[in-house]
Image 1 (cartoon, helix red, strand yellow):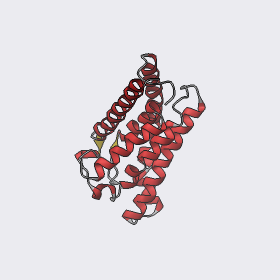
Image 2 (tube, rainbow, N blue to C red):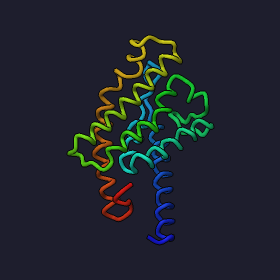
Image 3 (cartoon, rainbow, N blue to C red):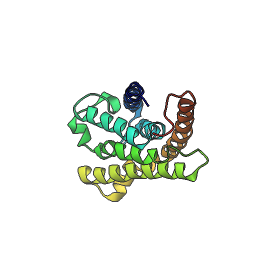
Image 4 (cartoon, one colour):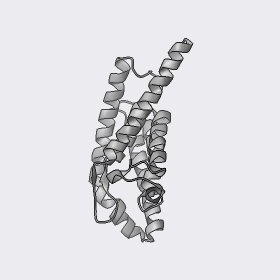
Length: 188
């Protein structure tokens, strides 16, 4: 591989990372407030999608950049919010665990939709997001486990299942299309 080809792949990787960072930010704005204080957003669809399409390393970088942008005040979080107060607030654990979610989801990146491993990594990624977010919520809101589960987990189970299924199908489909068009290297 020539230096020009390596540079081209690097620029392409940066563009994909930037695209998925922006996608997470855009889908964060599709937000439905719920009584418990944790909104229903499409971030938890976009983050595993980034991991599946880009792989664990680049998907993690895209979600980490998203978290850092929001933490410094760029209004990329739900309802065009941003700043350290959001990251350190009741929903901060969910946001801070996005890079972990992307990494774990990305571990299934080279699997087909028929592979149980693809679905296992997506489920583990979602579970990690819920676990960190719920524990964080309990600490910040000084709530019981029952109250935290009622606010952070139980209302989201049906949509979490749907997001996992959609991310799995769209992620593998998009990755396949990009590879077929030679826009995504076979190993990433």
